[in-house]
Image 1: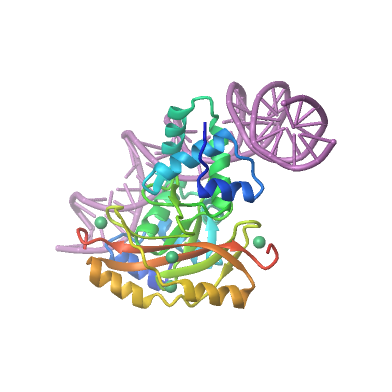
Image 2: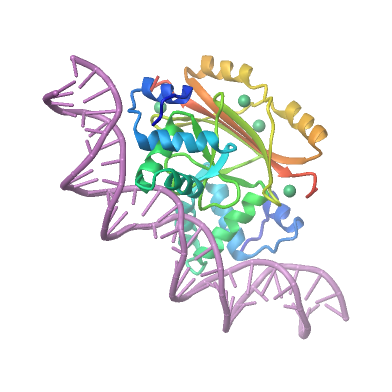
Amino acid sequence: MFTELSPRAIRLREAGHKLTNARLTVLKVLEESDGHITSAEVLEKVAQIDSSIGRASVFRTLDLFTSLSIIRPTYINSSVTPTYVMMPDGHHHHIVCTNCNRVIEFENCGLSAITAELEARLHVKLTGHLLEFYGLCDKCI
Amino acid sequence: MFTELSPRAIRLREAGHKLTNARLTVLKVLEESDGHITSAEVLEKVAQIDSSIGRASVFRTLDLFTSLSIIRPTYINSSVTPTYVMMPDGHHHHIVCTNCNRVIEFENCGLSAITAELEARLHVKLTGHLLEFYGLCDKCI
DNA sequence: TCTGTAAATGATACTGTGTATCAAGTGGAG
DNA sequence: CTCCACTTGATACACAGTATCATTTACAGA
Ligand SMILES: [Mn+2]
Ligand SMILES: [Mn+2]
Ligand SMILES: [Zn+2]
Ligand SMILES: [Zn+2]
């Protein structure tokens, strides 16, 4: 059924979690998304693939993936449902237009220096980060 | 009732919004919080000050303040209710422990250079940012 | 100071996201 | 193959946030 394990699936197993059908299906949906997806969309796509997977397991899996920094919930449009953002290499960065809610992605964040400084000074182990800018996009300026 | 207007209240008026009792009360509650507060806490404290203020107005005000980058909703503990974070000078930064949910604040982010670069390159006007690191705190490492 | 009006409000009823519970099922170590 | 802690799905539920709309109010302009 899932012959090939993605690197993230292997990460899951190495963190001591079982590779269940529900978890692998949610992971597949997230990896095939464009990187921004709401819980309602995840539920819908999971049900399309395997309608026997319960909604509780989907939410449980989203929480598990969040604690592993595989995804991060953030607010884009509504304050009801978060939008889950994939963190490909442990980080994600975007600009949200506070007028039209458009999201503009960007790549370079230059945060490796501050990451190292925080780890040394505060004795923490950082596994990821989210950097969000807010403002007006070129169409709303 | 509100003889002195805070700088943020003036910002509100200058953005073309009316300085209503509901909005000024929510602003007061947010400004007297330590910077992290859930919608449930805002509702409770607003009701203590003036129980005639409706819950819908509180949520409307939180959305308005978010669009003005006065606050920003983010996930700390639960995936049910966001925690609203004040953005004192347009930005906020913290570390969230993915194991115990402890939040560690820090000040310097060094993001003014990338802010200017993004504004120039993407033709956007940035009014604030949120930088969140995820990982394990010193007690959970 | 008074007035007119668009913006904002509060009450209400509602939607639907996310959760608690628990008996049944299953991944994977040995 | 066996076993069992972990995980699951079904169900019922809680409650955060919203749509609606009649009423009120901030404040610009006279
Ligand atoms: Mn980054
Ligand atoms: Mn900053
Ligand atoms: Zn825009
Ligand atoms: Zn911790």
